[in-house]
Image (cartoon, rainbow, N blue to C red; front, side):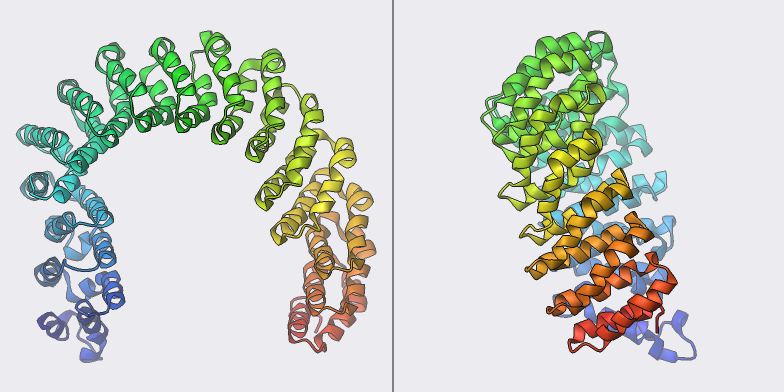
Length: 601
């Protein structure tokens, strides 16, 4: 109440309007204490407005203490507050006074709700860069120590995210203290704290001097990678990538590889999954020699893992792993060690594993070249095109361009066709939708003759699918095909079939005719639109169904810019005027809108 009363007397806002101009600010301050959560939330989101009205000094001396005292609120209010305070530097007087923001953010960094703590840490990290080196040691570093030695695990987890931002800019004595605090947190009794420390280990290692990476970080990494909790061990794998990039090549074998080998064979599938997921990054970090000697056998084991989730994660990395192998031995390693595992995965019992492999296996053709692709990979592609799982077939079809570059798509065309037809008629509409999206790509690769003979009828069948999303996608598909094959092909092949649907007894199919005309008119050009499409649209203005009639008005508006002015005046205008007098209110509305847009009034 005192803060509100003083705002109304704030000299910086005094003017011709007197206290009235500050009334909204007083309302915002009232709302900070309101019982309604939404009002408090709105007020917090406008905190910068309050701070501007109060001025920098009173924001520091009154608003911030007031906010610090009120940090017992709903989580969404605290989350908004934590975010706002990260942008408050200039509102408290600039970098010189940025330390005033630390008390409320420190309180927020200790609350129970994780998202609030994370946002408070994010804001603290942000404002840490605005502290001078002196202020960092005087104000920020003590805050980190308080959090790191707090009684509650919440404050200790928050501290883990702050070490790396203050370490590079403090004195060597303070650096030693920070390292000690981090060591303590890595061996904390609470698993949540060890998890937080493990997740920041790599980040902290990046700001340390190399001697301390070797003496401190490696021992912490080894300890965390052997933790009793698998949730801690898997985060240590993530840190391994950062640590490996910091160390000289000669130290990797002794300092990192024993722990990495252990993780790749960990009893917990979650840890092995993390190794598989990070495999390409690990491969780049350790270099070609260690990859050949250590990572190739480890990768083989992951591809043969007893858990499907691990096999799927490793299968996802097959192409990337093979690309990053040393060039001089790449083909030999793939043919001898990787391909036998890949052949087994093609017939894996788990569909997610097969699907993950199908999404990347085509990329091997560009690595292995034409002869190896025809001899070794082609049989695998053909087997996957016949797989019972639609996602596997779909993933192969969606990556056909890789094979097309190497051996041409004709080698696959005979097996491709049954797979495409099955997907096009799949019971799940999302599978049908996905194959439609790849049709223009297939058309371009298979050529117009093959397309007309084998796939054209499919594209037309989709236009009368019972799911609207399929009909809509099929319409877009036709436009892309016309762009690929040209207007003459459209006139001879597509347009007659589309216009034939105008007499379909199902009104939804008649409407699809209009949607197709809207989409095709620009691609087909003025002559085909005027001569073939326009008469059908005009005839449909007499349809018994109002939905069709108002879509006629919308279609005329859409194709109007393609037509010449004489045609608009003599043929389109009379029909739109007739529709503008229709009994149905929607038909009237869209007809009047078309007349207005086409300037036919």
